Length: 226
Ligand code: CA
Image (cartoon, rainbow, N blue to C red; front, side):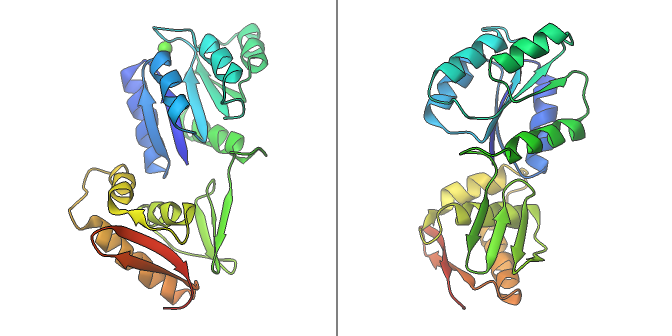
């Protein structure tokens, strides 16, 4: 799940981004509404977390431009210190999906985010199914025939990236980017090590999936026993 965070307060931005990355989300963060508007032109995010008080453009104006453009259905969760009824109503009228009033706790923010991601819609949470594996992008749980797979955050992120384009080779670079976003202790062999552990777990769980190595290029997920 790819989240765009628009928050101009540096420590707040870092705190939210770190928490969400720890929970397995891919997060891009910016302090400026104009940067965020440029970003959504190129990338389809699963959700946007939007602070209303921004230096370059009011968050509400950002929301109007977003909804008036091509991203009419990307879920938006508003962050604001403006605790008035009027602001809540105008935010929701302008197309926000939910509201979190500062100060909030990170668990509450995360729960609200998962709730908007779960709502039905074309880009809301989804369940991938391939071989005997299902993966719920919101709960971050992978199952083989209804039995949960016990995966680390790295293995989960890797499986999600492979499941996005099953049968296609995913370049090593993009897999590494995703894994290194989880923590900065990315050793040169971190990807190979995660692939090897995930392979063993998929095999042990009889997932009917295997990860094929395209030497020097990347990996792909294919159906069938090893
Ligand atoms: Ca602000």
